[in-house]
Structure formats: C-alpha cells, structure tokens
Image 1 (cartoon, rainbow, N blue to C red):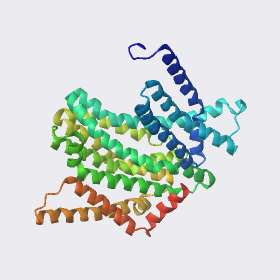
Image 2: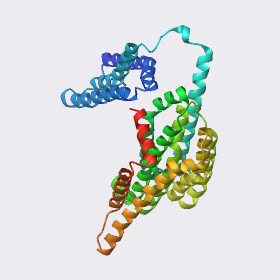
Image 3: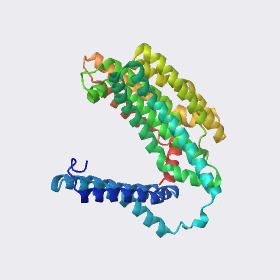
Image 4: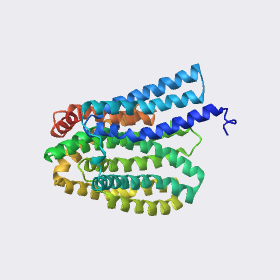
Length: 387
C-alpha cells in the first residue's frame, strides 16, 4: 500500500509516529476545556484561531512550494498540537490546577461520567432525529431523494450550528454565576432570547430566500419546487425549534444535564413514524414535513420544562422572549411585504433572496431601535458576563 501511495518506508514510519503522537496529545486536551470552564473562552478560542492560521498558511505553503503528503500531515499535526500546548502552558502558569493521582477517586469519576453521559445522551438523540430523514429517504424513496434531502439538510444544520456558537461563549460564565449565587434567570433568558431571535430571524430569512438558495446550491437540474418547499418546511421547524436549543445548553451549564432526554426520545419516535408514513406518500416533501411536524407539537413541552427548572412561568417568558421576537418578526414581515407590493406595482422581477435579505435587515433595524427595551438590556447584561 505504501508503494502504491508513493510513500517510502521512512515516510510510513514517520506518519505512524505522528499519528501515535497525536493520540497522546488527546491526554492534555482537557486543558483546553479547562480554560473554557474557568470563563476564559475567548482565550481558548484565540489559541484555536492560531491553529487555524497554521493550518491555512501551512497548507498553502506546502502545496505551492513542496507538495508532499508528509509535509501536509506535519502541518495538520502542528495545527492540532499548538493550541493544546498553549492552553496547557497557560493553565500551568495560572496555577489553577494541581495534578496528582491522589485527586482521582471512583466517586469523582462517577460524578463526571454521570454529567457527561447525560449530556451525550441528549446530543446523540438529537443527532438521530436530524439523520432520520436521510435514512428514511434511502429506505422508502431512492438514493437520489436521499442525496437531495442531505443537501438541504446542510442548510438546516448551518442555522443550528450558528445557534450553538451564539450560546457557547457564555456558558462557562453562566455556570460560574450559578455556582456562586444561583441567580441566573435574567442571564438565562438573555441567552435564550439571543439564540431564539437569531434562529427565528435566520430561518425565516432563509425560508424566503429558499428558491434562490436551492438554485445556487444545487443548480437548475433538480426538482426546484419540491426541494424549495422541503427546505422551507425544515426552516419553519428550525424557527420553532430555536426556542429550546439554547435552553438545553443553559441547563447543562446550570448542572442539570439530560433534563430534556425524555422529550428528545418522544421527538425521535414521532419523527421516525411520521417520516416513514409521509415519505412513502409524498417523497422528500413528506419527509421534510415529518421531520418538522413533531416539534410544532412538542416545543411547548420543552419550554414548560425549562421554565419549571428555572422556577419561572409563561408570562415572564412571553415578556422577555416571545413578545420581543414576535414584534421583530412582524416588523420584518411588514417591510418585506412592502418590497413585494412595490415589485408588483412596478412590475419588477425580484429574486427570492432579496426578500430574505430585506427581512433580516429590517429585523436587525428593529432590534437596534429597541436597544433600550428591557429584553435587549437583559441581552446586553448577558453579553457582559461572557466578556
């Protein structure tokens, strides 16, 4: 195999040693997580950014000057190792950790594993829910339908990933506030508002832009109408889903992992049943609807669960989260509707993406104008705890 790939025996030994070294580096990856845990999220991400620069510049340099798989592997290894080593050095300089085998006990490991396993279980079921559509498409439709569904799923996943990025920087600080005095309700609602607002505005904006997105993403040789409607259905589901995505991360930071596990399991079974039934009847559109419909029924249960854990109620949630988002969305729809009406009056052909961009820009403008309101002030206070 080595000869077929153009590798010498020395190259094979070097790459094997490099791989073994990277496995050993996993043993100190915990120091990167530790930086996040003490609230130094921005510092840890700065080190990760250094790794990205090494990877980008190193790859370009190798490809231009000395194209060789061994050099590429070395660059990739450096990009992975350097951030971890920098985190290790920083933690040791801060003298915040005392490494000793005496600190390890079965009881402590059980506590850590009980937290990790519950977080993993909720995440694993969430992943299963997302991937159900692809599996069902392959079973009841065709490989082509599965490929189309997988393509539009990437847009859905991009929105979901952005919501995670919005919440993540604040979780260590939120956890620290909770462990200190337990009064995290205001900050928790600030985080939920940020992630929900981004999810709702982004999803609706992309749903309006769906015809343009599908055409740019997959080209003209695909069933545009079917895939557009499928993407729009999934994005509607994401707009609703956005109200609890941040809540899962917040409850993890508060030391309450796995709180939504039963609801996740119920969502999974409903998704499997609906996607199988509707996928047989309506193809990719049915699968998209089967993936979206359960959350329309279950989201209120997710919110109620979160509010119970926070010791809050629907009235406060509506005041701090739902009504502000509803106001922003209605204003965005009004502005977008004006553009649509003007295009009809003046007989101007407007691409769908213009409507999506108009909605998102007008929604952002409303947020800026409402910067002195109580919900936005809560968000600004939350931004300060993550600084």
